[in-house]
Structures are given as C-alpha cells and as structure tokens.
Length: 281
Length: 312
Image (cartoon, rainbow over all chains, first blue to last red; front, side, top):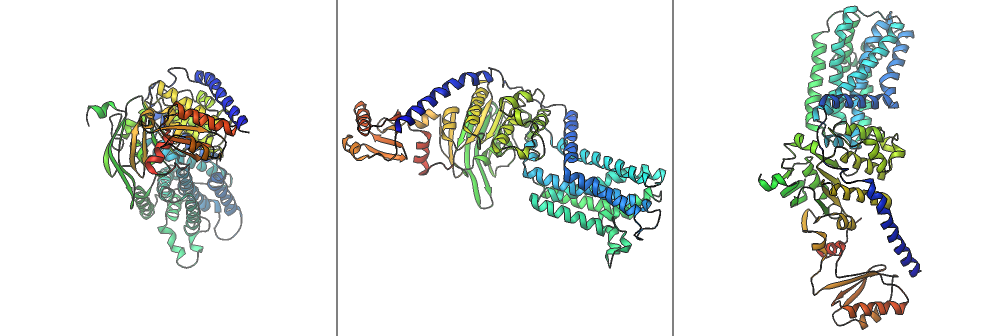
C-alpha cells in the first residue's frame, strides 16, 4: 500500500515535470509585457450602452415587464367595453400605458438589474477597470432611454393600429417628457436597487410598481378608485407622468406645471437619497 | 510622498481599517517593488482582502497611507485604474452576460488589450464562451475574472485568492500564468491561504493574521531554520509506532506525527540521525517519502507564529 502510494507520488512528480514544457510555451516571453492605457471614452460609452441594452432586452422577465404587460393592458383597455373609459378609449389609454412603460424600465427594471448586478459584483468589477465612473452611469442611462424609445415605438405603433390619433405637436412635446420620466423613475430605481439585498429589491420594486400602477391611475383612471385614492394620483410620479403625457398627446396642450413639479420633486428626492445610500456591492 | 513611493509598485504605511467595532486591518506596512510578486498569506478573516481593497481604492483606510505606482488610489483612482488589473475575490460580472461578452466588454476599456479569444482559450474557457456568467462553475468564474484582470496588459495586478475554487489542473495553469506575468515584469500582489502557492511563486511573503503582519521575507528567509534547531520531514504510512524511533534517536531529539502520515523530527539532525530514521522505516517495511532536511515549510512558520493551522 505504502509502496504503491509512494511510487504513485513519484510518477506524479514526473508527470508534473513533463507538463511544464507545453505550458511554458503557452506564454512565450513578452506575452504579458505591460502596455496599459485607456480606450477612447466615447467608444467605451457605445460598448457599455450596447451591452446594457442587450442584457435588458434578452432578459425574459424584463421583456415581460417592459413590453408584454403594457402591451396586453393597452390592447385590453382599448378594446374591451368595461365602461371605465369613454370612447375613443385608446386616446386616453395610450398615454397612461406609455407612462407605465417608462416606469417599468426606469424604476422596476433598473432596480432589479442593479440589485442583481451588485450581487454578482459587476459594478465593482467594472469600477476596477479603466472605465470612468461617468461612462458606467451614462451607459446605464442611455440604455434605459434606448429601451424606452423601443417601447414607445412598439406601444405607440400598436396604439395607432387600434385607432389612436395623437396630437401632432403633442408628439414632439412628449419626447422630453418621456426622457424626464425615465430619469425620474431611474433615480428611484437606483435608490431601491443600489442599497438593498437583491431579494429585497425584487420584492420592493415589484410591489412599488404595482402600487404606482394602480394608485397612479395607469390601469384604471384614478377617478374610479375608492376613497382618497381618487385624488392621490396627482401627487404620485406615475400619475403625474401619465397626466403630463396625456396633456401633450391627447389634448395637444402643455403639461401642467404641477405635474412637472411633482415629477421633478420625486426625481430630485430619490436622486439625492440614492447618492447617499448606493453601494457598489 | 517620496522617491521610494514613486518607484515602488505598492507602498503602504500603517494601514488601519475598522468596520464598526471590528478592526480588520491594524497597522499593516507593505512594500512591493515593480515587477515583483508579493504574497499576502494568512487564514480567512486575517485582513488580506481589506488590505488589497485599500490598495485598489475601494476602501479608504482609517489610518495610514498607501501609494500604488506612486498614486493615491482613493483620490487618483482615475489615473491609476487604467494601469492596474484587479481580480476581486469571487469574481464579478453581469449575471446574464456571456463569458466572452464580459471579457470583450472589459477589453473595450483598454488601449492595447490582449486578444480575448486567445485568453479564453488558454484559460480553458473556450467551451463556455456563450454560457451566461451565473451558470459558470466557481472555478470558471474565477478564471474569467483572472482574464478580465489581465486583458488590459496592466503594470501591476491585484489577485485576491486567484485559485480559490479551482481544481488541481486549473491551479497549475494559473500558477504557470502567474510565473509568466512575473517574468514579463508585471508586478503581482497576491492574497492566498495556500502555503504552496506563496512558497512556490512569490518573491516576498507577508504573513498576516488578525490584521497584523506577523512575519515578512522571501520564502527562503522565512523557512530557513537556525543552525541548532534543524528539522527532518518525511511522509509515510499513518500511525507508525514512534516509540522505537524515539529510543534510537540521540538525546534532545523529538519525533511526532504532525498530520496523518506526515512526520517531523526536530533537534540535532546529522547524517547519523537520518540513518536512524531510515533504519526505523526499514524495520516497518515502509518508505520515508519526500524526506526533507533543515527547511521548515511556510506552514510550520505559520503554525509557530500563530499557534494554529491555516484554515482552508
């Protein structure tokens, strides 16, 4: 037994020696000669944005959240006769569904992605590279805006098929509102996703999404909600975004100062808090 | 700081870091010359990762100062980071990103990156290049993390437990790679709780425990015993009867089985002592395997300094 062990050990030693020759040639002299340096920041930003968008679009739950649910609600609310919305139903449904899409991507999607990205250490990993901090953040923001643009095209296109007739000048005015909405909800997403454990993020982000969806009057107009909830929507970011979008798209008027103020206040508050609480891992 | 700090890869004075009431690092000094490999050796919880994260700029020390390539990692991180490669403990990537995408993403940050396809191939990740990160095995995630640390051709790399979770084959490969890094003039700051990793690879070893430096020096300096207390190690069948050996050995010699099958004789070791040991082995009909004289292993040094063995 001992002799076998010892001879086995000896052979192992020989095998190790023999292995060294091919391994040695794996890394010829100079393979790792230092040549450090930073790539062009704009190219880094493009790569980072592309990667972040791709990861969102490829994620099945994100696709459900950002596209499928808004699409089903848009078609359902616009075609079913439930008596909650006066015809032409699609005209009042479409802006609210666009607000929902922005909230799904900016808030819930961003929070969950950030929560799990932190869990898997990617923020720390990327912070340790030559990637400047601003590119890391800008890449995430641009990716969220790209996804919102895609959602707007798909949902807006579907609404047009359903007979939506948005105001022509309103469409142009709606673009900055969509951008503002994405930034405001994005700040909230970073606040939730940047401080809590991934599982907690999942629970909080989904619950908040559902509450803001209902209480903000995105599914059913707020005036049909019971008790105090029928006027609460004006002070929620979801309700304010829906109101601002409806003003542009349905009525062709400027959004009310109050709706913009409510949006910006939520964004500033969430952003300021997130700056203090966000952690890399 | 001074000339020395500018020319060194890493220079740290009195680093201290507390988390709440717990002092993770309690006054650590480090010096790593450019192109050298330094191993921070210690058990889990010794303060190795905290020390490295201070050097990488992820943590700000409560006391003490650190210069990496002459720069302050917390305030000059933007200038420093393109020049270093970091392999954080436990890796780091988007959960849904494919192995190759992740490496290419990191490579896209660098001016003259190594070829990502080649790196994946030599690290044995060729077969999993389209597998999402969260579905890679622990060893594969480690190798991808190592690839990310190296792809930018850094001057200095920080490798935190680089072979943790790897099988023997992968570990040999990574050791080979670390030797190649050193040969090409890349500075390496390595943390490990593996004695042989530190002993085989590093130019200098710093033994830490409870946030303090217990000993430092080259592996040779640390392991060479003094003349009067030499040692004889060998490996054989476990649980051999040591009584006859103790009787036969000269006065002042001790013999014990430090671990099953690992024997240690201490005292005045001369040719006669060696002959006594091998004669005793012959009586038992066993071989004295890996018979080694004089040098203590780093493991012995650690045991002596801390009174305990390195935890895995």
